[in-house]
Length: 408
Image (cartoon, rainbow, N blue to C red; front, side, top):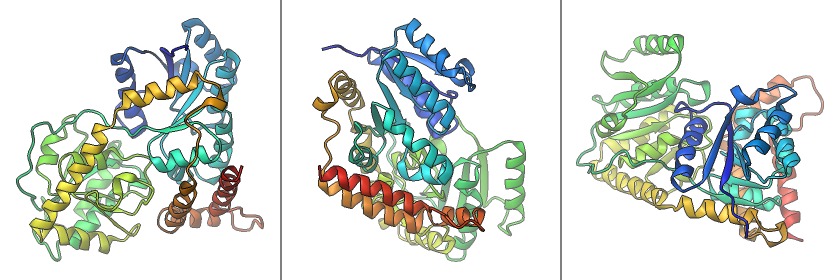
């Protein structure tokens, strides 16, 4: 049977800022280590105009690529061009997809409605969770869940205590809501007066300045919030913390949650029920989206009870250990092997009937806790228009398609 070795990997840029960039960068080295030959292609080389498909097709032929992995899926023009190029050359096209559910919020209804139909033309999807794997298989695509986890930064570390310091990590973009972390700390200090907050990450100079001004005007004492900016070595900050905090409106796959768990930290997060790293019993506690008081109360319950904090911390580390133990190499070998078979012989398309119910539950939960704010914005934007399809309408149509596939 033919084997895939030369893999063209596409993203708009590579780097360590942002989950997709970081994942793509790590994957390049990972594939080289496993004996594959990754060919890195970015927007700088491919462009984003009408000639992108012909340029990519020429590159794929010249380098002898045997498959394409696409990380840049949120732009209809680029995504369509890349699929067309792979089709022209006749090589399998694989999409690395972060989350079905967060894409709806991140892209907005209009963009999501443009991008999702393109997925019908791809050969396979690499999903980061079993929920996403289930969704793609239910609509008739090859799909395989391969959770992302890079190096263990806490090698040899054994947590002995849980200081009253909270850690927040991320970029300063609206959906991460870093200011909520400050408001939560202020509320938390009403019952835990010595609680402190460390913020890692940030934005541009103006965004950083605005955040520092917000902290200064919050009424918190000097030193209660430490803004450390971007750090290459996050281990010391994780060691000094006692709990993690996530205030995102949505996430595709949160590296911050993974790293907090890696450090045996319990995590308090705004609810994102589709994220497996937040599932019950994994050292993570979810509170309603945007509920500052509930997040503060949950943190207070941990910090005032060292035994419970340690128990949740152990569960968090165990959860990380399971993620770290996943054999990514074997999973990719299975994926590439399956791509060399006819679709009718694929082992990556069979849906489990129970998945339909689980997906429905996730969609309902997410509609309540994750998509609510987005849907309100959508309806405000479309005020005056009679035919407003709504996010749940689109999800409903996908569920109908999934149900039909189960009945075949």
